[in-house]
Length: 211
Image: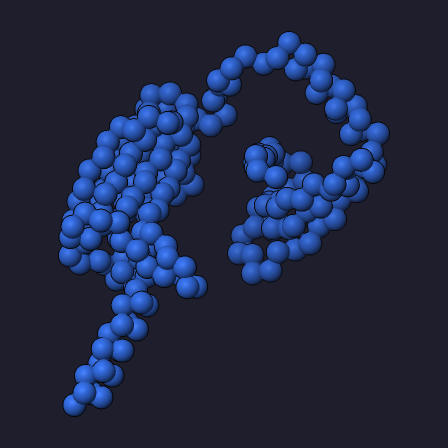
């Protein structure tokens, strides 16, 4: 009997350790880009091992740019829908936190490390109209004109490597660009719709600040 009880306890412990929390997000504009004044609709549901998390709570924090607009706790057994809008260019963020019945943040293990059930999703509002937060330095144009002149003296040498398992509607490649002897090469990822004709598309460049 003791051995049987011990086996049951071990099984229960194993099942608890295997719990994983995720959030199922959706948007009324799947591409995540909106116009000023346009309704932004987030839907989120907390999942426990891929199923709706019963008996838990979901706290959402809605922000426009860096300003918190709303913080609300809801039951987690059904999806929540949050609708907002921004009257100016910027970004909108929804942070969601899974909570237990005592309003403590849920935690689970991933590869032996504790992970908290904290997730977020963001959208952009008129991103091409976002203005700089500070004026450009006086030598801004001259500085970049000089840098572009240096680049023109470096022969264009690009290495493209196809990314495996790319969806058929687009071509995706790892790209390495030679920057001359004084700098490390630039690495990035290039996405192009599969049906696009040469010189038919604008370029949208995402530059990461870290590294």
